[in-house]
Image (cartoon, rainbow, N blue to C red; front, side, top):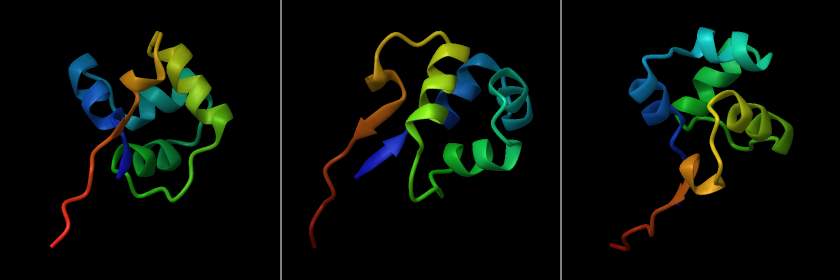
Length: 71
């Protein structure tokens, strides 16, 4: 499963979705959905804005892949 680490990053920095929204220009409810991994798709433009705002240098700081366990 591919997921965003946005919630973890916000917690580490003491930020909330409204603050990220102000920093990026992305609607706060979109940021909230992204942080909670409720979004079905992420636009490259929004991912780039978040990378810049949080001063991330590698996409793996924002996106991670975890292998799903099969039952």
